Image (cartoon, rainbow, N blue to C red; front, top):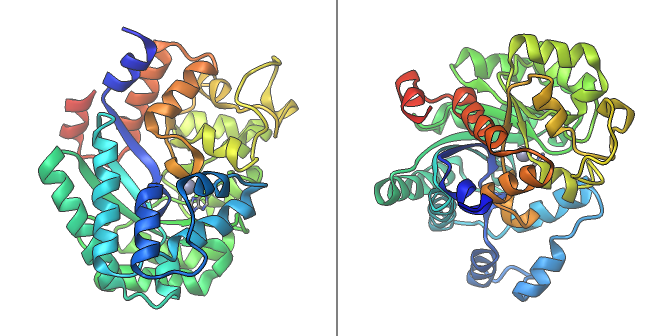
Length: 337
Ligand code: HPA
Ligand code: ZN
């Protein structure tokens, strides 16, 4: 089989993908028209151009503009269904999906509307394709700790059983300020799933671990600048959810190819450290983050990893790492391993 066929046939899980960042351009355009959102008389070609980013803050601006087309329960249901179906079509059996609850609350969309919509779409997709979806509501760190608290309040008041964790994304501000909100989330039985080390360095990852009790690290590539942190991640096998094309498209790295040899902290910010992280024995998983916004999907990330020098055995290892790092019940993990 060709490598593309091999990847397509590989049973996979997806542990780091954003619901809103999974909105395909046709749905984006349809919702913009439905709600007459200003500034969205865009063609599919214009959307592709709009999805080219100068840097990470620019990406976030575009993401937040796109999120505004989501208004009612049916919109969220359509997005959840479409997202789950696209994953299932790639032989993804299970996904833990982030969604930007703080953005919706700040736009005065009631949490029950969001939860009812995404649950509706999830159930229909699970019925029709057999995929299983669990939810990770998150807030944007740059909205502040108070926004985090209000987001968690909404989750605890209205969240369904299918919510399994709590996250923080957005601009990568200092993490210690979120200690209390994550403590409250964890006390309520939610897993701690913050972004850290996406556009910033090891200090963000250390505080995600020490202050937030992170159970996986979203991105984490900034860890490579600190040999002690790499040793810690290896020793504890704390999973790191990596998304190469996202990092390339937001400018967090300049290239995906491994052109120079040597430890990546010597070339930090240039080449993607995924192959090195795997060689170092970290529990790395491979993920798509915001697939249409980065012109990729999960199979595309496996193809990118292959172009970065990872052979079929390494790709299989990445897929198995995903199963191990997931919050699937143990018996379901065994069935996928
Ligand atoms: N990082 C932080 N926040 C986000 C991302 C991301 O990759 N995608 C959507 N919101
Ligand atoms: Zn992310």
